[in-house]
Image 1: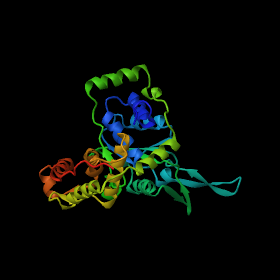
Image 2: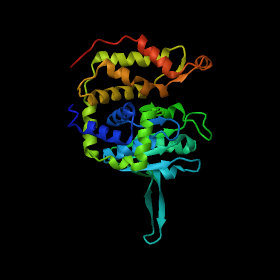
Image 3: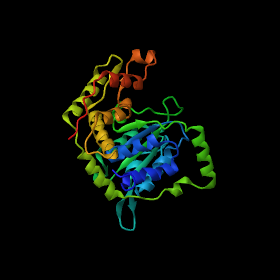
Image 4: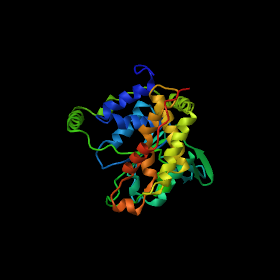
Amino acid sequence: MEQTEHPVLKAIQEVKKAVIGKDDCIVKVMTAILAGGHILIEDIPGVGKTTMALAFSRALNLEQNRIQFTPDVLPADVTGFSLYQKDINQFVYQPGAVMCNILLADEINRTSPKTQAALLEVMEEGRVTVDQVTRELPKPFVVIATQNPVGSAGTSMLPESQLDRFMICMSMGYPDIEYELEIVKGKISTDPLEMVTPVMDAAQLMAMQKQVSEVFIHDAVYRYIGKLVSATREHSLIELGISPRGTIALAKMVQALAYLRGRKYVLPEDVEDVFLDVAAHRIRMNAKARVNHVTAENVLKDILEGVQKPSVVKK
């Protein structure tokens, strides 16, 4: 994949103009978008989560909406509702926030479980049903959701069944001080989002998503994925392991990463590089792990070290 020619790499370069010093995070988001998945960013306010989502919508030339979740946001705000219009004597559908290509769902864990469930259902099915009428969402459709760390005031933790709908969960973290000063200087002089220019469109992205689905995975790599997943279900410190949906998400992510790296086949290293982001939010640690302050990341790294990688295979 030529870095100077391929639209995906150009899009990454455009996003970097607005999101400084977070190259790994940008690549992860782009990989999940290519894989057709949704992204959950768990982090404190003010580290650039919103800027990241807006920059991607601009670089990919996709229609975007943003919804700030608060306790009074209703499911109808997400999915839409029917409003009676007297002049035509009928109910007319009023689109909700999900009628777009990229939805930025800010602080999803600050709203009610009912509203959370409405969004997560739409993410899974790709359509909304209002007054018994089903409407397809625009394609492609990607949710970039943010949530405050567990324990923040006024939050309602997402249950495992809903966390499982997100392909990856990641954290941006604080920028390095030199990058932070660059951000401050940039904000003072101009809005960095204005520097981001479109380099592709929805049709191109959908074509690339189809190409990603055709990236070859050798049976040895499939078995490697299977062993990693099984290890999470059998580990002594894990109460709930990766679900079959998580296994599918892992396979799709490694295909997308291989594609992003210019290959038509997957290597075991691709699996290693995305395993934590795909798996960490899908497992539940047991009481013993919590008492000993063992994190999901610690256990997953041990699993990666304990499961033997297959030798390099190519198609």
